[in-house]
Image 1: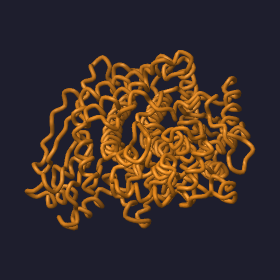
Image 2 (image 1 turned 30 degrees about the horizontal axis):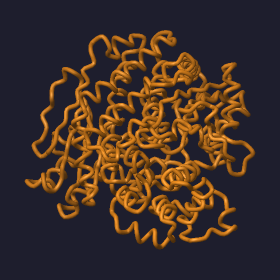
Image 3 (image 1 turned 180 degrees about the vertical axis):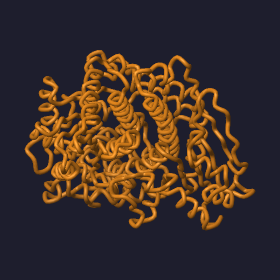
Image 4 (image 1 turned 60 degrees about the vertical axis):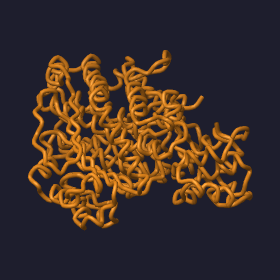
Length: 602
């Protein structure tokens, strides 16, 4: 049986031939599965007693570490790869700011270091020794540590190495595994240079969890809208679970499963209200962005606080997922690196795509109208108190640059839109006339189910933090819907598979083999692997030396290359050479159209 995180979701089987409104509806149905998946009588889901109990127990451990007077000896550290690592960073940033303690209690590690917060650095995901060393370094001087390893598919060797280190040092670490598959479906493939698989590590942790020496939080949320794209439900569910745990840990009074459930129900209600309020806005921006991509335009997100962070995260995920360029989608945050607060600080010296200040966007736009391509889109996602809103209202640097570029020809040159996330009765603020599109997303949460009333066990600041988190989820769903739908409309997805993915780590290597096999009738898994290697090395025969090389070697060769998987699919279907496959693909701009025309896929 395929892991749930790798399974194709029947809801989106025809997403590639759906119109924008239909795509949004399918995304809505998929997101609702986070809270109430169907047909899972024997699996643990979000509201299962075991999952809720584990969340409460982890919150109790976190509370002790946060509030004990230990002169900086305790730490809560979260870790992951790709999206999981970026959400780990965001949660550490969020709760250090929320608590405002002299000594920071939250930390993160991410495979590939802080570069992975802005561009794909996915190969280190496969290095369990690096994971272990990163954890040891992050925990220097700390003696009591709550470690939360995040891997949606229960598969990342980087996290496996850290979990194993925690279990070998129980006097120092309380390990938690957070993901979205049952343990039996954890990856059971050899980890390079090690005798263990992730399955073995997960089974060891599951045994420890029986005595509360470790904790397992792994609700099934069903397949992603685009198969395997855990940046969507996986990322959202990770944020929701971690926010809930840490809000409980800072509650004003005692808490139990009942209080945990109340917070989660607010997220469920917000998801429903978001799609009721925002579907038209998402479908419109999805359509405009697809048109922009096809005209070699760009999509820019700019925001403040959590919305700004999530915009950068969404932009970072597009190249490895859809083969997008680093310039297709970019995210910016008001305040830049001092506001971002990542471990390594300002990385702008690494290149243009590491420049994330809203002032950098203003500078880009300030190079003059000729520097900005037609069909460029800018989405500003804000609440009423966000600094970036003042930038626009008071015609400061960013607002002035947008105004100068837009001029009188905004409809032809750029589309600049504000997505306002407002409470039910909030008054619409005055906005400048150069903004071409304004979408107001109101969340009409009733008085009975606001954070302040439904979650009276939280402090007043905790209730405000929960409210901000609900709005951040809305921003994430807006970004995800826009970029995912646009790439689907551009033809980067076939059925609900991301066939133009980058083969940049072990997970994606094995996923690629599965995709080639699925779309090449009658071939075996070994044959699919052979076609993948032929495409990676641009050869027609794979000799023993290549075939017996390590997966790491194959990944290093594949990571910089484009259209590796589509090329392999065409070779497998047409029984043609690498060069013939490349020539055939070059005739088509849209991958979906190419595969339909060049293969036996129906």
